Structures are given as structure tokens and as C-alpha cells.
Image (tube, helix red, strand yellow):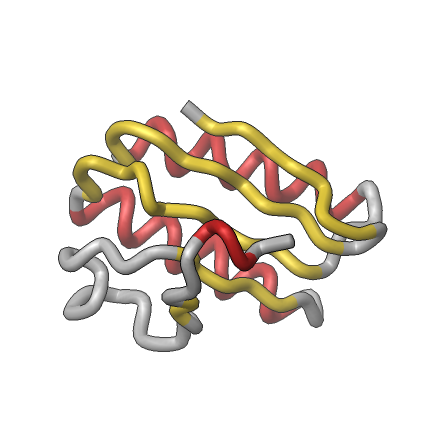
Length: 103
């Protein structure tokens, strides 16, 4: 499940829950693309409630981040799912701040 929250005129936060597999990652990619066309340039991905990220989901998430960077945007991953640290997200910036400090 994906929910979006606008934090500022150019910043959007995506809350991702459950499994982050190919289907969810592709859906997230579409959300990011639409948001980019609406003027968002900073993308935050909240993975605190992700139960599992498979290799394909991780790969798609890395591609989303790469696409954002290529278009001049920035992206950050909130949370610290252990399976991500040794996978394809070497260029991602991980934010470990608790949700209470997001506002």
C-alpha cells in the first residue's frame, strides 16, 4: 500500500506499507512520475512499515531514485530496512530520524 503526503510545495512523502515487491515498486514509480510532472522535486520514501523488500523491489526503488537524480531532483529513504543496506541503493541517503521529528 502506498500513501502520499505533501510536505511543502515541492516535497512529497510516500508512505509504503507491507511488501515492497515488483508490483508495488512499479506503482511507486508511477506515483513519482506523476508527482514530478506536478512540480515535486524532493521525494521522501518512508519504509518504516515495509515488512519485506525483495531483490526486484529493491532494484526498482534504486531505478526510481536514479531517475529522480537524473532529472535534478533529490530523494531520501526514511527508515532502515536491513535488507537495503547491502543491496543496490548505494547512492540513496538514509534518514534515521524518528517520525515525531518529520514536521
